[in-house]
Image (tube, rainbow, N blue to C red; front, top):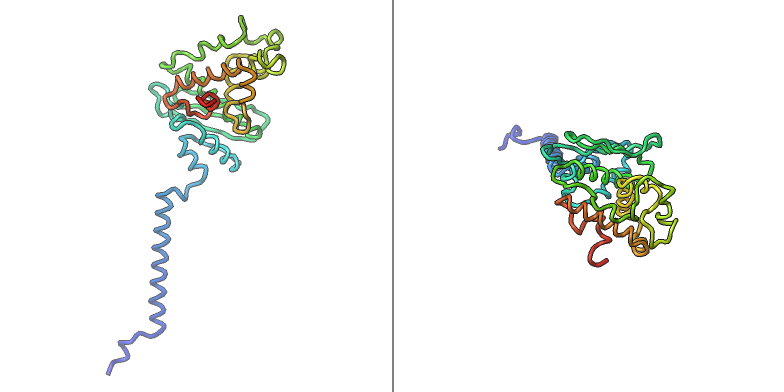
Length: 255
């Protein structure tokens, strides 16, 4: 004879199974949370980009993040980290503030000890605006770091004889479209203002993913020579840059 007090009621069995299911569910949720935290799956896209490229981003438009990610993926590995360093300052940052505004032009604010801040009008071509900021920080880096030995010291060798920046009327004949392409030294009138504007305009074109410069460089060798020299100067100044840099793709041995 078996006493009925040793037997479980059907309802008790179901309750036991329910407790086991809940326990397993809790364990699964905790396990998933750990995986998310370890792999970064729970991080925002913005945070992932910041950690991936070593930058800080401030934006109200999440769609801009994809464009930033695409652009930075083209830069040489380690280039941004090297761009941030100045002599004894190794904790500098590059912060990108993206705002759709026509009230304030894209600009770069520099601080040798803390870092560069790129204020970008994302209502304009974002790729061009980022390129502008990149080359501005590159120029500032090359001018101010102790081991850079100057910037574009031979730049005037690639301009017309006795050329001086700032005289638009006198030298307008030398920009692309106002003269024969073979004798063009400048892309458009803006580079006539300063060597910095000249180099910036060329770099922006070099970084454009939807524009092919092969014909321009073929027909305007003087502009090509100037662009090639700019690439060589950046490679000279940064250890992370070599012939595989995206902006250098027009000057590889196969070109």
